[in-house]
Length: 355
Image (tube, rainbow, N blue to C red):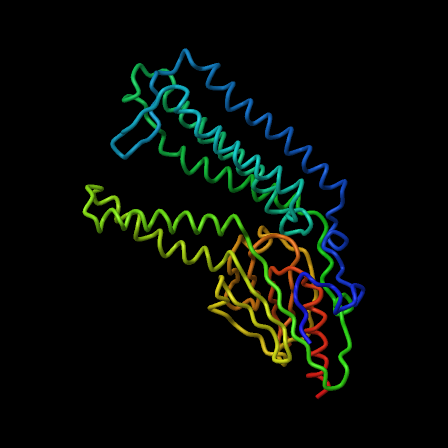
């Protein structure tokens, strides 16, 4: 018997409890609305400061502005508007991402995600203000951009202040501890004696797939120019060498395929489901389904720290299969219909334990 997504007729929908992340971690509607409101107001104030401060000091600034420094002094300049726009654009993109992730994502559902979100909101804004402020300070009251001197303490001060304020904001905004998953949260089904079933599912990140395709195309085009002898210069090598392997890596982490059977769990990467790794049934204590976000594990892709026993295959935020190993440790895999996979894994793990 085979269970495959998206069909839902083989395993009863109520076969066990999944214990949703929102119910466990305090990711309530009120907390989400508060975060979105604070982020909207805070981001607007930061944008206003990034625009108002340069305009207020414009009469004391040269045009163009020095925007990059080497040890000997400034080596490039931009017009007044272009020189200050990067800080505003940098913050604007980060702010939009934070608002969308808070309003529609999973990042606020768990403590680790909330800490990262609040830290990024405050630390990122301080960094943007620091970059803009240091450029203004270096150019203030100089007649020509070549005379602008960036203080040696400016860069470490900006980085240090952003890191400290971000860490403090993350600590204060992390909220209540998450209730850990317990065996009682694990979904379960009963297999008749001798009955065998297989479940197969997957998760895909279309944005990463498109990114992989774009990098592959850019690398191939650069390579074609080289082969045809077009006068593209040495910069073509800079483009082709990293883009092709990066395209392969991104394609592998953009699609994950999961199989659950009597022999345990198999997780395959990429369109060909290879490479892959397995977790035998005998090494599985129990499994459950939870909603997780990339912020909780450090981003997308294969994430983990040696010696911790924790590993995450994060393709996209949302529904994940969480497997507790018999010898300790945890495996998190992004996959659709994770509750069915967990129920079948638990059935086989129970059989193995009984034997």
